[in-house]
Length: 350
Figure 1 (cartoon, one colour):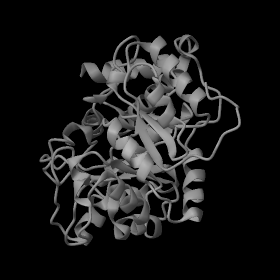
Figure 2 (figure 1 turned 30 degrees about the vertical axis):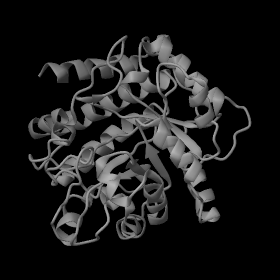
Figure 3 (figure 1 turned 135 degrees about the vertical axis):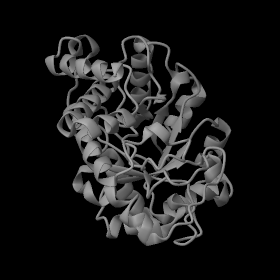
């Protein structure tokens, strides 16, 4: 679905669209030079035909733009009807691991493949998955989105899921660095604080980011403050993001979490938040569910470091799938897809 028309460099902003088709204001925002990505939500989905038309229109408005969605499985799955496979919460894979390690890794690959193949068949380039947070049993917003409490299990299952994504030609994004599973507050509506030490967090929550190595294509930091490390939330913290680049040798894209969330409010206005995130080391900032704030951001953003912006643009462009993908009808005849769906149905039935 991606057009071969000449592409302009991708900007550092990912924004959303209002409805199930583009209006003039959506197109204006997508074509703004600071825009590099579009994120979709459940409100943007009516059925597969409509979704394909929407993604094609987005790619036509801005060739090469990265189209993303939060489509993890469980309670965070934006498209659930008209043929989309109901995907399990990641905790299901962790529970399977506790019974059968090899079966769990195979199932994780199958989940990743089905997830990515269905999205790509509809013109979506990236899902913000996997969740690498640990399941401490105390975070309502994470909960069963986490694979497991053991960071080793999280890393192995996430690698297996990422392998499935890659088989369908999709990159991945680990979240929420360095870890949101311990903080009880929900960063959508509050400002979470994690009082643990740097050593505790790095040896436990953040460990999967190091173990996954080159298999991790992108990372999304948490809107969580770790006051014993830095007074800023991780996504606005040069210390945390420099650690990700230097200590974990991460070379991929760093996405901020949504700047309209309460957890980002400590940075000030949405423009202040974007400047803080980009200065700290993010490549792309997200602004969701607020067209007015998206306009404020596009109008008010200033690029302070052109060289860093060019490097970020190149990293973002590398996230856009370049290979061919199976259309929906062909996908329904694909042996790998059918076998993987069978695995998922069995897992959901447990």
